[in-house]
Amino acid sequence: MEVHQLKVLRELGALGSVTAVAEALNVSPSAVSQHLATLQRGFATPLTRKQGRTLVLTDAGRVLADAGVSVLDAMAAAHNAVRDFERATDGIVTVSCFVSVGQVLFGTLLTELRRQANAPEVRFVDEDVAQEDFPALTARYDLVLAHRLRHSPPWPSTSLTVMTLAHEPLDIALPAEHRLAKKSSLTPEDVVGERWVTSRGGFSPHDVTSAVAALAGRPAEVVHLINDYGGVAEVVAAGDAIGVLPRYTSGRANDPRIVLRPLPGLRISRSIDILARPESLRRRSVQEVVAALERVMTGLMSDGA
Image 1 (cartoon, rainbow, N blue to C red):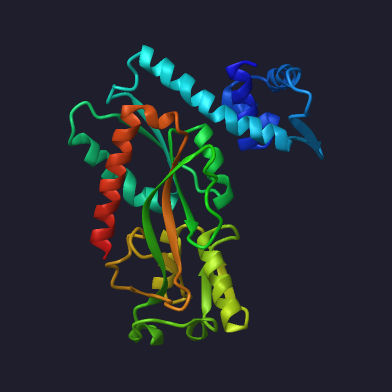
Image 2: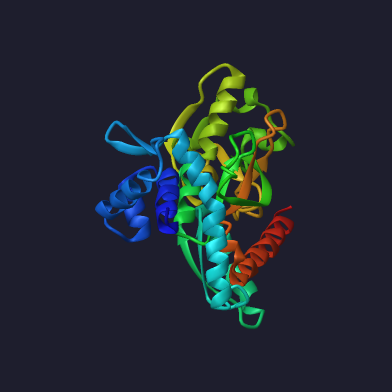
């Protein structure tokens, strides 16, 4: 059993297909299949099985993949120690972030890092994916900023480290002149009959709209599907519909055209988390970026409070 074989097995469990593993590891699909076949020869119990046209892990394969995490972590630590990599504060750190937070965070994070000597160089990529797809991004980036509604299933913790940056309420966004803007808080019955701008399925605003409709016992009239919070805010400001905006990171807390009102009965909030592979966090440069992210998020929440 070789370390690279364990890595291939782990990536198959995380990414879900031989093709995705090949792309992540920059090898051919046939090389991935060969590594899996060689690994299988060391075990009597099947490690993979066919599910339709896709190769997936069996229960035994998942056990081995989870056990291999500590092996890969140890090997990363040994390799980094030889190169003195762990103690280096500079270097490149790749960060993936979903769009709504990236718009208010990227520039502020760069400013924060420039204040310290020998700061890491950050490379940003915006990845606005459905909630269940965030963990797989850790195969490609050192740090992944992800969001989930607090009542939704937690992130997988066997192969990832999860650090919570913030718990952010999601509020109902109303035009400033709307008849409900005078109320300090709202109920599902107050808002279900309004025209709505919400997101596509798999994203937080869609979940909020669905919860409102369920509690009110009638469907909401969704007239616009917009995933970008900036676009949502402009539609709301124009008076055409109401929507859902995050309280601190939408950049609209001081927009005079919009008012944000909570739905206390639903207690809707999203968790903004950093997801990372354990071996990535052994690097001092990555730790420096995590600390800077925590400072920046604290400032954003203070400004929006």
